[in-house]
Image 1 (cartoon, rainbow, N blue to C red):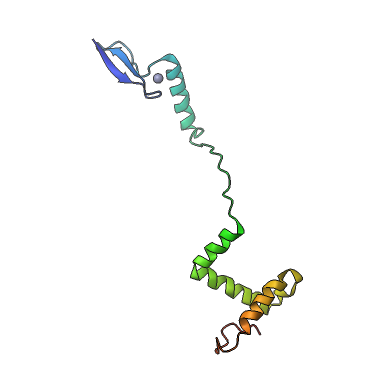
Image 2: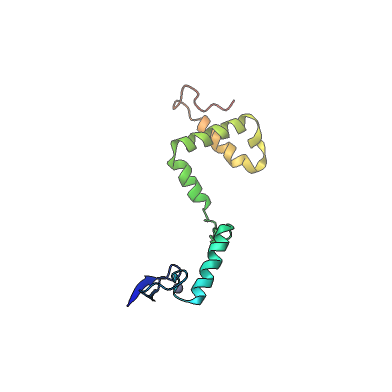
Length: 123
Ligand SMILES: [Zn+2]
């Protein structure tokens, strides 16, 4: 009579005699699995094989996607507007590369009648 067992390493079924032999019962399907199993246990005990390296490329997000994400969120949009306003007040948008942003802010600011409370007054 034989008993069917499953190798804990490779999952293959293997057969052992039902009548108990001396020593420890056979646990692995083969010598290679036995060695590999012991090696893995030893390594796991040392915390070596707990680490798996999976190469994941960083997701590439386009500028447009960033913008869309910001515009999707009232909090993010408010944040951007506030920071632009602060930067404008601090004169940080006076640099040439920010001139188009300054122009846009100026356009927002100077729309008469729409925001009588001075909602976006820059100065
Ligand atoms: Zn095996």
